Length: 212
Image (cartoon, rainbow, N blue to C red; front, side):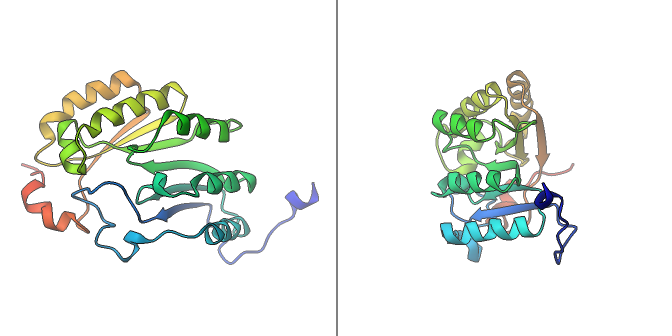
């Protein structure tokens, strides 16, 4: 096909990957959130604007995207966006989510949308411990919901990556969390500390883990 083979001239020919913050809105109140003190906290594009952004990505020869937020599953046009990315052959490399709004039906729909992918997409989920996670994120028993979702995502063949923020209040839960994640056969586990921005500025003194 000559159209496929035709070279394109773009202003930024070296952009191959984009992390797209598709919405600033979220259903949780995390103590380290970098969005809640930001101008973008209530931001999300209209469907028209989002589709225009995808066209710009295509015109710039972007090959893949990771979609993040806020919480992207609060965005009512998410399925439209995923469908359009696939239509333009822009690979959905991964999605970042707190997983609290993921249901069985959404997992099935996401699997159907990406059924032709040679590799499963990455589902990057925040999980900061067990009971500590509930307090840190603002919803009771949230960690149980997340672990149920993780199990189903793995069973459906997705690459599940867990991101954990380490604080002085969850260090004692990390070994137990490790054993649980190992049993669930997740793809990877990433440990990090909260960034010194957003809400973390207000909670840092009481929660920051010491290196000693």
